[in-house]
Image (cartoon, rainbow, N blue to C red; front, side, top):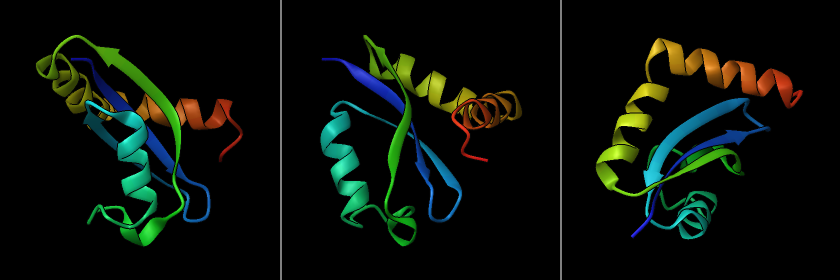
Length: 85
């Protein structure tokens, strides 16, 4: 089974969210239907980054990296490249 780390962006609220899943399309639908507690108030969401991994453990390591200061800088850089800020 493949796992994904993803970064979502809410253009309306100028917010990002980072997570991991084994089904990116289904997870995005849940986020946009307001079925995820931490993101339901900031819909709609779009995927601005995703990366595939062989194991959940690998995906969790990358998710944790995105949530530290270096990863947050990378997300900010990505948002600049996409003209989202």
